[in-house]
Length: 145
Image (cartoon, rainbow, N blue to C red):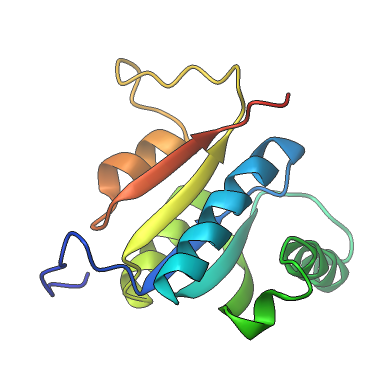
């Protein structure tokens, strides 16, 4: 875990974590806008659950990386230093580990419009990331679904 004290207004490294569903696509515009405004490094991350039963994991991981790359506008390379990462593991745990290792200053997550975010049950990927992150987390609710 990183012990460096973060400056509240300093955003140099943004982590956009997505499950690649349509509901999280709205959040990518926020991540891209912040990266553009701050000239920040932007990492697109997808965590493929270990318990997913797929016959050809390498092919699925390649597909996921293509999907991540497709979220970035073609002209964004001129103003955005981007990285595309697909890993296997526990989505919440590995998002948090990646954010700490990468020294992310902000995590951006997309939420479906009808997602009920409850602190009473203390379950789910979003709850785990929001409550366990060492940096701010911006959750963006999809308004189009």
